[in-house]
Length: 188
Image (cartoon, rainbow, N blue to C red; front, side, top):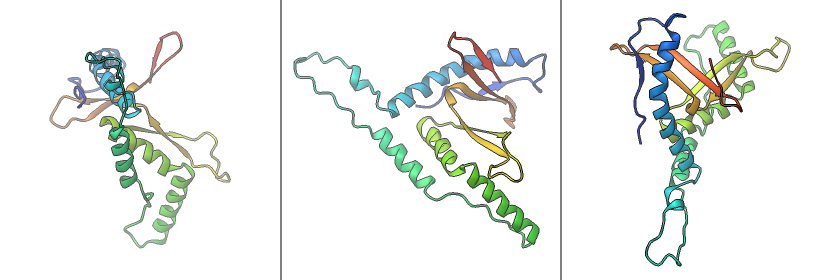
């Protein structure tokens, strides 16, 4: 199952004047994509159509079983792609570059990047899209054993990107929203 489509806009730039208009139009396509992503997520988790199928012939014999091939395939692909954590290396033999690359590798270890990579790849294998957000880490100090950033894997059911409708398909706006217990949405 493929997503209904890219979310695009004809605007050349996203400004305070047009952001709401672009967001409202984008939500129509995202809502279709969200329903497909949610179906695929539930299918992956074992909630498959066989469980709700009605048996018309000899209904007294009704053995339902889910052979979850989706979980098996996703697990295999994630293990294959993320079996060994990524290590960064410098292409230049400069000692400063080597030291900075070593520091970057240490930060990635502290931010638990291999686990975040697995989450992103898992979402991508399940529904064909995945999102990562990098934010500053408020707990970071040079003396702490914290990375200066946090790596977050976003749920694609409430995250999307709006692209330009031109030939370059530039990223115009990334949207993440939350729905509170009363059903109100907060967009960022």
